[in-house]
Each structure stands twice: as C-alpha cells, then as structure tokens.
View 1 (cartoon, rainbow, N blue to C red):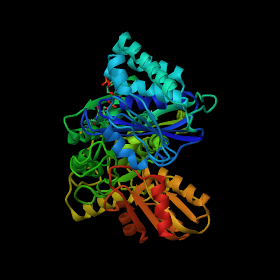
View 2: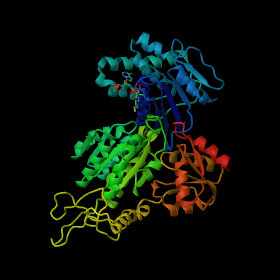
View 3: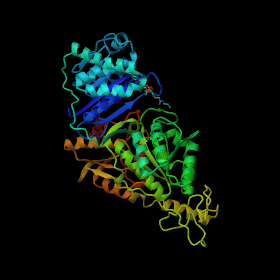
Length: 575
Ligand code: COA
C-alpha cells in the first residue's frame, strides 16, 4: 500500500498513545511520511481513547477517511468504530478471554482475534504490557519494523527500569508468536518502507512546531497558564528557552500571562503566550491594552471544543469570531491560522514578524487536532527565514522631545525600551497624545484610532497571497481555513481526479481578509463552499460581511475534524 491508516482504540490510561506513538516513530524510521491523529477523553483514566497513524511514501495532507486496519482494545472501541469496518478493512481485537466477549464476524472484513489482555495478565503478569502485545501482533501482520519497535521500547520505557523494558520486549514476542501460530495473513496490507531515511526530516507535533517557530523568530519570553490542548507549547519552550537565554513564566491565570507578555514586550523582549479558548476569553482586555499601547505580542490559541470548559480534548475551530472581534472598544489585531505542522512553524515566525513590524497583537489560531498530531516535516532551515525586528527609537540631538506615538506615514512609530536616555514615555491603556501623555480630546482619539487601524492596511500585502489549488473556471470553489485546509486539499485532488471542475483557496490570514485575492478567486467559481468545524459557520459569515461573497456554509461540530470524503460528498451535493 502506498497509503495506509492504522487505528488503535481503547481506554484512556491503557497506553493507546504510547502504542500509537511507537507505530508512528517506527514508520518514520522506515523512511515513510507520517501524519497522526489522536482523540482522548478529558479524564486521565477511562473513556474512549483513539490514536491513528497514516503513513505513505508521499506527502500526507490530512488524517484521511476511515482506516484500513483497526485494533480494538475493548468493546467500546469496537462499537464506536463498527460503522467504519467496511469491506476490505481489517480488525484485530481482544478475544478470546479478553475485553470483547463474542467472536466478531463482519461481511468482507478480515478479523484477527488476539487475546491481548489475557496474554498480558496471565502470561506476562503485567496488564500494562497489553499495548505491546498488540504492537507485536500488528508488527508481524503488517510488517512494522520489529527491530525499531524493540529500540523504541528501550527508549520510551528505559527510565521505568530494566524489568519493565524486559516484560515489554517479551510482550512484543508474545503478540508476534500468537499471530504466527493462530492466523494466516489474508489481507493485503503491509507498512513497507519508504526508502532511505531523510536525515533532514524531523517528527514533531503541531504544538512543538509553534515552539520551534517561536525560537526561530527570536522569541525570548513566554508566559502562560497550562490548558489542554495548548500545554505542550509551553512544555517544549520550557526546555528550549533557557538554552537561548530566554525566560518562561507560568502565571496564575491567563490575564496575568498576557500582562506578563506585554510587560516583557515593553521591556524589549519578543514575547508570546499560548492558550486555548477559555484562556483567550480571559485575555480580551489585555489584547485591547496591547492594541492601545501598541505593544508587539503573539498569542497562540490552540482551539478546542467550546463554549465554556466545553470539550477540552476535542477538535473545533470556533474561536474565530472572538479572535477577530473580541474585547471592548475599537481594537484591531491580526489573526493567522495554520494548516499543518510545517505551517505552524512558518506562521509562528510570520506572527512575530507582523507583531514586531506593526507593533500590534497577533493571534495565531491552531486547533486540537493540529496541536496534538505529529507529522514528518523537513527540518526548518533558520537561513530560510527573514526575521523582522521592531523599529527602535534612535536618540536625536537632545533637543527634540521623544514622541512614542508620533504620527508617521506608515502609522508605526519608533519604540524605545526602558532606560534608554531620551526615550522615556508612558505606556498606557488610556487614550494619549503623540507624546504618550494621557489625552481625552476628540482630536487625539480620532488621530490615534486612525493611526492604530491604518498601520495595519498593508498587512494584507505583507502576508503571502493565499494559494490557489486548481486552475481555470470552476463549478465549485472551496474556501476554508486552519487545519481544514489540508482536508480540502485532499478532497479537491480527489474531485479533480474524477474530472469535476473544482478548485480551492487556502488563506492563512483570516483577519483582516485579503479581500482582493479572495474576490478574484470567487470570480472564477460558480459557487463557493465554506467548510469549517464550528456551529455558526463563522468564517462564512466573516467572508460574507467583508467581501459580499455569499458562500454555502458547511459547518460540522461533532468534536472531530472533517474527512476528505465528507468534503468530496458535499462538493458533489453542491454540484
Ligand atoms: N509499559 C509501561 N508503561 C506504559 C506502557 C507499557 N507497556 N504503556 C503505557 N505506559 C505508561 C506511559 O509511559 C505513561 O506513563 P507516564 O505517565 O509515566 O508517561 C502512561 O502509561 C499512560 O500511557 P500513555 O500511552 O501515555 O497514555 P494513554 O493512551 O494511556 O492515555 C491519556 C492517557 C493521555 C488519554 C490521559 O492520561 C490524558 O492525558 N487525558 C487527557 C487529560 C486532559 O487533558 N484533560 C483535560 C483537562 S481540562
């Protein structure tokens, strides 16, 4: 198979994530491209957890549709995935004497029973090793490099002691031996290899990619409050920032986090915070302050299911309205959204560049599925990135007063940092004059409001134009955002392969909009389809409001990303 999806489902706490990580890592060590997807409950133990690995010799655009191989650790996992066990798929399941009490027979589905619980409990005396029994079986049946798996067990469980490592190695052997003895392979699936391993390839998650992008941009300060699914951004930077002389402050809440970031930025640091929806709600007043005081900062929002505490571990793209419009008063900001892991690196650098160039808050939206997923990407080359730093105050001859908010043609005024002779000013959320003194006159409010908004006029040109997929006139044009873009790419490829006249636009700047390019794209399409993972069709509404393009909104909001098939089916329905 040139493109294979293996899914593992079971209970949170049973080691589904560890097993999935190992399959992904083994595939990458075999020279394959990987893209993973995981979803788990908000509880630490219990509830349905799922991990799937898609691997291919070619670049992978999305999580894909369904799976070829499913490994069920218990009945709940089997029930949840039963509708996707379609003819041609394979099931490996915990039977007999396991969590699944009846033999499974499904027309057209190859079912391999494997008593993983029993082997782990009775033969190995370590229930925890159930996942490695399953992995041994998967390795034998689907050709997942056994030597790599053995190495990975030593790497992952080494710190838990030699006895744990040994039992897990035995578990791999036991799973393999059971399959050898009890089943003859009748399905066509094999992982295979992708050729020589590219040394310039790394495997990282979306959250780690944001951290890496921040380092490339020169970020030296992060303050945040832990929140699922964003915490890994801080975990990554907690290890990396001290190595570059940077600082991480875990604050008491999200309000304090952004307040710390603004203080650091005022002091000259390249500063960032990372959060998810509930945290972004709390930050709104501070975003207004960043706008008012013209303080560069980057705010990463790894969106999750909302509102309120909502569905903390589930996927959704429902913070767009808040990102673009949240807070009181007239406050501007820039909002970017990342498509995939490589994009998360690049857009974090871009977010810092915009924040510094325009002295403004920049929000970068990712989401639960992108934050948690790992992908193989080309190792980012620091030389590839242009890094923008803020326009700094230069002392004059001493006779001119420093005007922090001087009205300039670009709207951007040079910024001093505390302690620079001649560069003292008041950084405040109060309206102010050019000199920074508080001022409540109509004249200053109008002039300063215009300055703060107008300086962003050229952001739409600073951000690369959105990519167009497909050429010529189309019957349907798809416009989407965030990680849905990857799914759209795959669906549009499938549609075009079937001869349908379909194209897509892939914007990364979601506020303000690159109206000129969006309108030009829409002019080449008879109908516009706007898929996104939220209830209200938020991007469709923003598009309508800003460009007049009345796209067909296609919202899904079940806590899961789109599949390419869903979008392809919708394209056909629209056609
Ligand atoms: N031998 C020894 N140890 C093993 C093992 C094996 N064969 N397989 C797994 N383990 C260990 C893992 O190393 C891990 O240990 P660690 O905690 O010391 O790292 C532990 O068992 C859990 O296994 P893991 O594979 O990482 O996770 P899981 O698939 O069992 O799922 C989670 C657990 C991740 C779903 C769950 O713990 C979780 O985090 N839920 C989400 C909580 C959350 O974010 N809530 C929202 C709050 S708002």
